[in-house]
Image 1: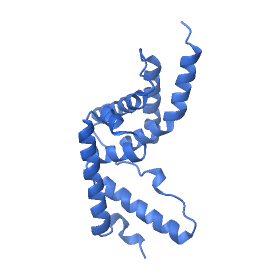
Image 2 (image 1 turned 180 degrees about the vertical axis):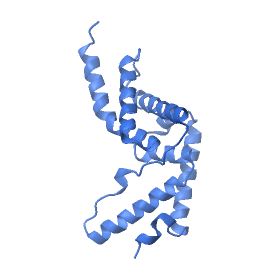
Image 3 (image 1 turned 90 degrees about the vertical axis):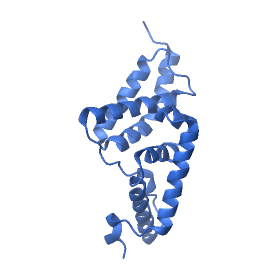
Length: 178
């Protein structure tokens, strides 16, 4: 049975829009880029097979939920959890070398602080601020209620804020400042 041209175009647009974010999300959860690419590819294959396909308003949460479930399945099957990868976007290029070094140190410090948060808080922070998803979409992906997503975000941001102000430089970064 031939696929409609409109469906093929829709799938191409979805692939163009979500391939990189899904690979990044899976990479953070798995710690292996090639495996993350495979997981993202499986998400799109499942979308192609989905009958009926999720509507435009639900395609992002649907893809992230499938991706999340595939990474959870991988962890269960392999019995181990990898460290989360550093977010790429946090190393924003600066104009002057000293600004660039300072920003890199701040980004490294924030990455270490985020990695010290519970996994659920890390996940909702990254889904919200790296992937730009709404509370509702995060709720659909994680299975947490919308209000619980808000609580997780509020708690995580509060912890990060207080740690950035009060905490000494994390041990992983102590030798870098001078």
